[in-house]
Image (cartoon, rainbow, N blue to C red; front, side, top):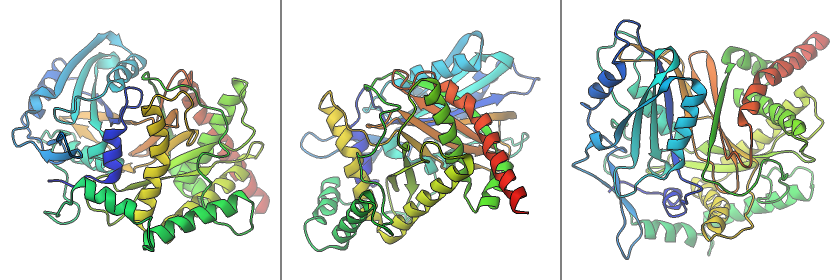
Length: 461
């Protein structure tokens, strides 16, 4: 059977109506003018010719007296997972986002294949959208980028029409031996009880976090979990979702990064932090402490399941200028990388499971007082360096629609497409009303950051 990591298990066991673990792409196509009529139906028919492969042929097995596991469904019928929707024409992109949120809010039927695909037309301009809804327990963000990369063609005249649900390239041995999930969980947690390297590394992580919280010079740890998180961007958990999106110019982001010795991710976080500060100020909820974000990080040399850790750190302090804010964020992301470099995969995955499992368990038990993990989650699972097509149609957007985990109320996920960084905002509207206003502030915040960096460069010339 395929491997199921402890993080995967938590995604299945701690899922609630308010916190479904659905992820997937929203792909918006611009079909060729010739043959635009009926394009959605023809595309659906062509894709249904393709068989399901790993991990899209997995089914959840839930024995009465054992932990859940995954098994391959040898008779997987993709036709039962693919659906057609037509918006009341002409539907706008806002109407499309509202429809996708409605679909995204409900949990998948865990007795069937763990994904669905919706083909949507009736969109203004003759556009056609594809929304793939998949359980996060069978695939991570990087895996989904690979799935989409295999799905979408590099040229408009590619005669082959592939589907989202085809097999991904194998990672690791062709037939890994899979211990039972109970044994994997027991072994991992058991490392806390003795002198194992994992226990020592975890204790060292926590010790560094304590020293940093006390302000000890030279402490390079993460921030202590559940502490120092502003009350901004929060509220009661809800099943409702709102979706917004925007883009940033990738070439200009790289130029700012080169000028400031920062990564594109650092530039993104600084821009996002500035836009959030403006959003909170307009709502009369200016934070008195830095906002805290959670960042998923892909781990290497992990076979099976979601090879990720999710670590928290503060963004820029209130009152910092754009360039100073970028510098503060760069220092924090470097500290996170240092923690990853000094700790084993088991350590950071165990840390992730504990830190994120506690608030999920609190919500699962129905307790009114939740546990705050971060103000938002920000994920950047790479993307596509060139234009993409499907059955001759140009891909205009590949938008990520992700998870809003327990202890958080806003998820920001980015995917590159050609020369643009696409940014998707998924929020609980009761806690983060008007998420489209945050998306609308991104361009102005980026111009402000770009101007500040250019002014420093001129001053030092």
